[in-house]
Length: 195
Image (cartoon, rainbow, N blue to C red; front, side, top):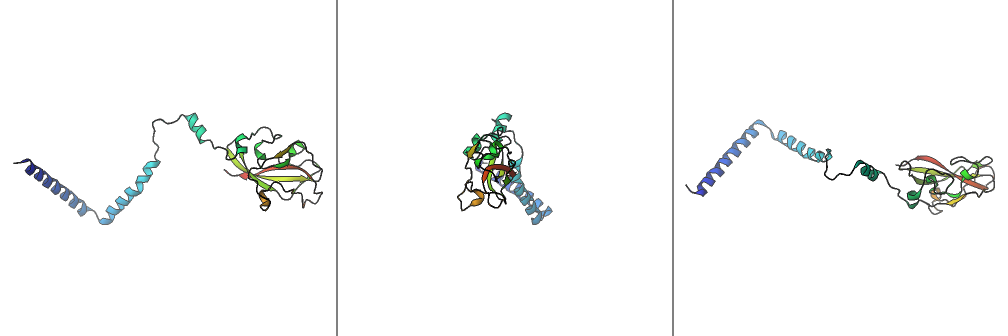
């Protein structure tokens, strides 16, 4: 018996074994059940990518936490601070243009005594370095007294041209206050969290 004859016999044996196995499977199952199992397997394959895996060369917890911390999206946000609300680099003042009410006898979001808040405001989106989130800030002018000129800031994150007044910080918003339209200072109230 030559080597090629034994190879042919083994191939024939393998063919018969495969045919017998497939006939038994076909006799015990329907096409629908085979398609259902095949479809389930195809649908389950992407789920394996979601399973937790220990990866070689993983970073340390501290490095991973630092990498997960969101970064500021603007130059002002990168240098903003959250401690001194009397400084122009305070995080809420990313789009403020004018005198700070905190230096004029008011607060970050309250007008000084003797002034009234404007009924309208301009808005900005500021990054808080303390918690890594961005917030929608409403800047409102306080009106009715002469300008206090203690600390004046000009920050322009997201400032838009005057034809987009809701995001323009150059407009004096004191019209419609019912008192004098004289500008005193500007507040920066948080309206909501963005991220």
